[in-house]
Image (cartoon, rainbow, N blue to C red; front, side):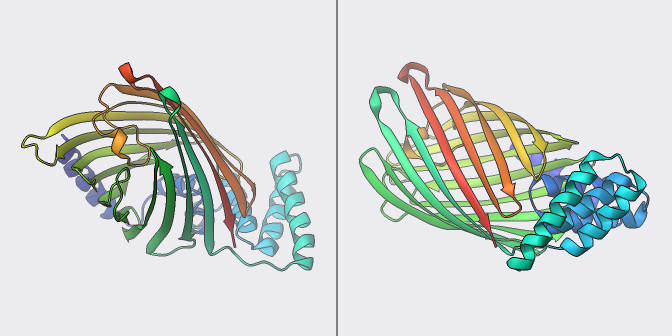
Length: 349
């Protein structure tokens, strides 16, 4: 099933790549997706392509001005917003945006700024298990911003779980092959770990299909001290205006050392989100099956009876500072319930 989904993904990506110009509607959907992912310079370039094909679109020009302001081009943003307000004097969104830009320009006179090129984040993750067992961890991450064919994020995690304090580090990579096709990869190491996998390797492919639809397929291998876990499956994200729908399926095969046969399992996740403002989003999600779609951990292997639900909220208080909170409640069948929660802080410069 997963291989068939991958074949369909490659076919969709090939068809998309054969139409490099694209329609204005397709470019607009891509711009909305990039804005939703907070890839602001890329979203700005995409919206400018839209207006090159359809120059009169008020909303497209509004988002160009907003993105110009969020990426530090305050002079251009003020000029564009003033023009938009002249066309629609009663538009409250434009009036508020213009007031923000003028306030930021006054602040910039005291503290000159340039478009952000880097993003750093620090994240706390906690879990509480039946019987009082607890897990706490912190992750420090760094990634590049801007319009590059190669993007990367490096991360270092320190985790205290089941009386083991372990460290895990590595990187996620993305190589944009065409405007609508990206190759992804990841590699993480935790030497000598007993709870975390000692090595994690993954590869995937993501394609932008029609109507704001992202199709992906990926493979991940987790090498634990006493087990090898292989996971493969497709996923999709559908951007429909302010709404985001995501779904993911995983087939998991686990082989323990000294055991000849492999244990097979399945898992699925569904989520719906509502976007607002500066790439802010509120999500609710549910999951069931052999993995909880959290960070890999020895205790998550073989939890075929698990199911749960949760919510997350990402909010940027300014173009360069934001946070994200998440909570999930998971029913571990006969083993009781597990509470998972986290807080992530983001800073750009």
